[in-house]
Length: 270
Image 1 (spheres, rainbow, N blue to C red):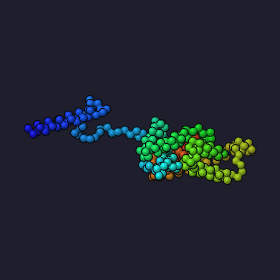
Image 2: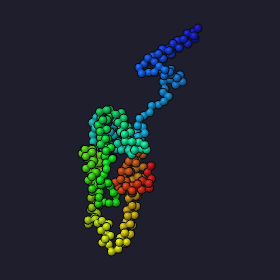
Image 3: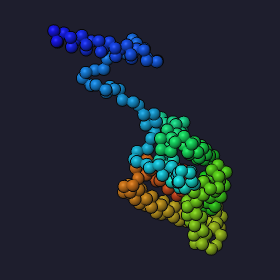
Image 4: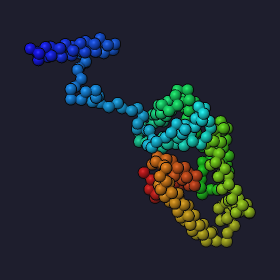
């Protein structure tokens, strides 16, 4: 008798639970099922995190968003944070990257500061797609100053003076020192290869010497690139995405397009 009473009470409790779930707003009664006794309280399908395909690996603190004292402040840290989402993986678009940055920033900072971070990202994204009139060419030092001047101007147009200085000030200063050192090492105005060949008594001899010098220059720059990549791979503070960003920035600054691609194959990069 006692067992029958307990069974009736259990069935009644189950019916009450089903009725309450069916009456909840937005719930389809036909889809309401009682929880499994084998796994109470567990959802068999874990939630899918939007943007997980483009989210960088490794831990990032809220400080990496360049928010200091609750205020977004121009620092290099925000550029490094942005770069952690780049380069784009296979099938990943800039739209997806932006959505992931928005999601991560809101989680760390709240909507107000996240909106300010996104405004800077939108400017930075335009800079990534800029059509440069004077792209860097490692084999033509005479064009480096024009390259630097254009980069300096465009970055400030797109990012504003404060953010451009925070993001690129150190890089631009180092590039300017490199140009100054090159000029100091050449007290006589550099001649173009055409003028050298025209004034040389033997064009074949000059061409041979130039070819040899070109090979020596390539070997020297390639050795430096390999050393830079070795240092990056040994830096435990960087994840794989950060290492790829930095080595590709190094190659962009020290090699022209075809040579940079060749160097990527020789390293080799993932």
